Image (cartoon, rainbow, N blue to C red; front, side, top):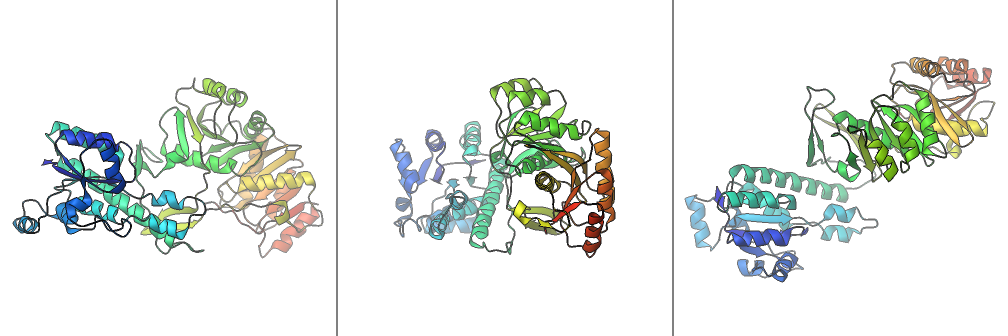
Length: 511
């Protein structure tokens, strides 16, 4: 156990600061502080030793040089009980610092602001803070270091239980947290300063653990959630989210974000079971659910409008795992919270990350997130017959959906008036024709006619057979990437069946 007699406190985030310092004072801890932190403590009536008084050296250069001093880092780093270190400390008047409480300039928050200047970003790069944190964390055998205000209570509890001392276990745990924090901080700085039109030369990933999960994709796999997922999604009700829930709700939220009109998506294993757009969410739900009335059991539902009582009542009739919405009306919550295990998630921010990362042996793959949209103006008609206005509307709807279906992906869809809907979805097959067959079979199982429908393919049709199969099923228009060496044959087959075909020039593989 190491008793705390002297603390150095310098924080940007002053949450809980004064009360923490007051409690330290009751243990007889002498407090050294800097700048705004010292002012805040003095205004609260606490006794504070200014850093310049402690070091005998004035703050200078707009505060850039204040804690970078041997009395600070010597007091943190010297090994207690080491004769040579003790002698050097005595010779140079270095007093031990037993507790360091530091949190860093808000660099990440600063650069997240629109139109931030390079000068503003540079001035929010903390130098003294990380230096003190690292010194203290390295010598955690003797020094307690706190980087997160959430840990104030834990430190005080141990001091109360141990006569003003903290345990080896706590000091080590807090030191690990420091190195994770400074790593992430440096990574954020490197990412900002190294911004180019290319992917970063070094990929820095340092995310704090948000929570342990019960298990991963399967019960024998350990799992945890890292980062600030909670900034985007807040759980309002229900059981704890599982690993698979998090994957699925992210996929569902990403899909409905593609649409401006009221839209409902039902997701199972990250693939859509059905998607519908309509003037109201209740109407959109009926369209989405009609695509497949079996697969949604235990699925994830996402909407892009506040979820009201009408759709809540409809959703409540089936078993769902998770519902994601920008908000829920009080009436909707009253209906849905009757199901104690149903997870209700409020989405508070756009879900599109700038970078998509996946692990591989020895490293990671990184790519830009696929946020590419297609408008009517982007469509290139390559057949003799041009699509009708209704077909164009349905084609764009189908294209937005197929982007979120695992490859090889085929989506049959229809549009009428202000509504659009999926009719059949084929996902993740080794052959595009097989995906087409599955989509047709699913539509028939649901009792939905494909006569007059449109079909979307996430990549080009390598042979005419896929287009012919769609025509045989009743499709009248096709949207696809194009770019196959057999494009001419595929287009000729479409002309033979009087299909309208448009090319996007964009592929949406999803592995």
